Each structure stands twice: as structure tokens, then as C-alpha cells.
Amino acid sequence: SFQLTSGHQQLLSLIEEHVLSVKTYGEFQTVHMRGRVDPVFSARVCLRAWLYLMRHGSPGSGCWLVAWLREKLGIRSDGNNRSKKRLACAALCRALLWPGDSDGTDEDNRTNTSLLAESLGFEPKFWLELAQSCCGLIESVPPSLANKIMNDTNGQGLTTNVMFAV
Image 1 (cartoon, rainbow, N blue to C red):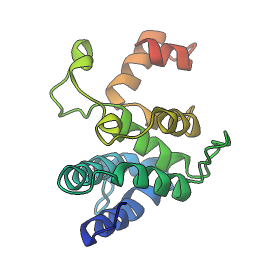
Image 2 (image 1 turned 135 degrees about the horizontal axis):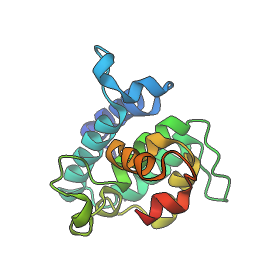
Image 3 (image 1 turned 120 degrees about the vertical axis):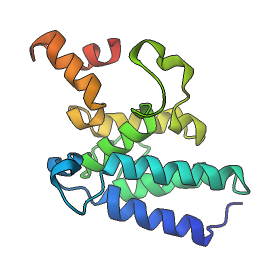
Image 4 (image 1 turned 90 degrees about the vertical axis):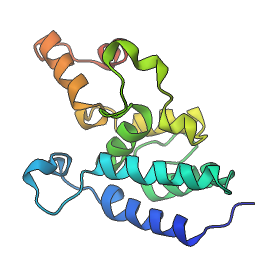
């Protein structure tokens, strides 16, 4: 059985402050926002720290974190995936389901990097529910991929099929 430690509580507090509280599209572009932290960067750092704690004495914490995220985001496992926190879902989606720009991967070599969601032991059903809850938001994919899609399609015919085929 998993017990929250003070380290886990601090990470949850940071996730709430810097990821779950995202309200505007501009928060994803921190170059222009002095004093703000990019929600994707914050999610990635906090979740990697959670993974570290998980590997050093809290192996069951991944399942607990999924339940906590479901509750905070309003994602129910009964198929109602319409979260009112779509931007927070997009930030988490990018952090969990896409390698970071600094992870040493390029477009042709994505298969060598495990997903953060996979490393944390998150169930694939949650991955899908999270992705569906922010479907349609370009913030849910890395900027380099979004630019490639927009340039390759000239902004026309952008569908989820195009996104997943890249």
C-alpha cells in the first residue's frame, strides 16, 4: 500500500500550482511571461522526480498518481473524458506522451526513448483518456511537430490521423 511522503506532497503541490492551474494559451510560451514556469516543463520535471521517488521505495505510487490526476482533471474512467482543464491535460499529454526536446531524440529515432507515462507505470487507458480530453489543442503536441504538420499541410486538412501518422 502506498503512503504519501513529504516529497510526494511537495510534488503534488507543484503540479497543482504550475500545471493544473493553466488557464491561458499564453502560459505555454514562457519566453514572454516573466516569472512563470512553462507547464510542460514543470509537469516533466515533477513527474520525473515522482519517478525517482517511485524507484526508490514507492513502487505503487504510479497507480495512486493516476487516480489523483483523474480526480483533479475531472476525467472519469467511465468514458466521460471531457475535462474542463483541457490546457492542463494538454501540458500533461506533452510531458507524458512525447519525448522532451532535450531527450536526445530526433524525428527519425523516437522509438529508442520510453514514454514518461510508460516509465511511471500509467495504464494505457489513462493515456488515451488524457489525449482525448485535450483533443484538438495544438498545445498537446511538441511545437516542432506542430510546425512540421502546419508546414507540410499548409494548415489545410489537419486531422488527428495526420498527427499520429507523423
